Length: 224
Image 1: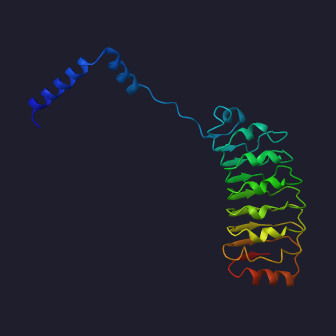
Image 2: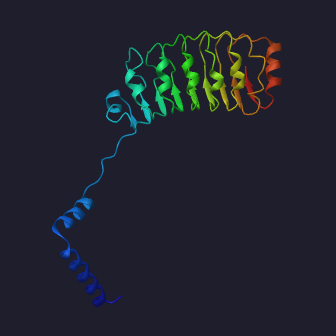
Image 3: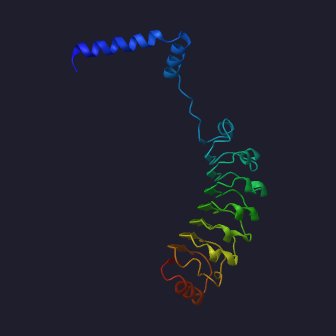
């Protein structure tokens, strides 16, 4: 395109703008200069989280001094990842069912002595940490976590597991180190297809039961 044609085009565009009402020109300029403030989807304090609780997706409260589970978290309906590791909350409320979009929940080292059955309603969970607590039993209903791929129960006080643990068909990694287990549920068929690694170190499991577990999970790396 030659210089003359470019000059004509610029002059034509300028004439069009000049012909616009003044308020229209103002709107065009304002649209070009203004920008929407970004809404944070990740927070590391409750104060940050409550700026936009309805859009928050990640809340990482690792090592915060929390005396209990913060009720404010229940007002974050789209939360997908929640980390409370080392926060001594002591218990998880039944109302946790409100966090239906949770895919990752880290409750390691939180002082849990029991676990609410409501966890079984968090059916979008893919990763769950419950390690380094004092859990003696697990609630029924964990078998409903059909998308769960990673479960960490290391260093608790579990002597037996509920039967429905064996029906977690998506589970790929199961950590049970340093508990009081003498065996696993009789039916492990639900784990057989996808479970890649099973850690059972530090449990008083007799050799006969170890052999049964190996036979039931032929494609899994079982670490005693």
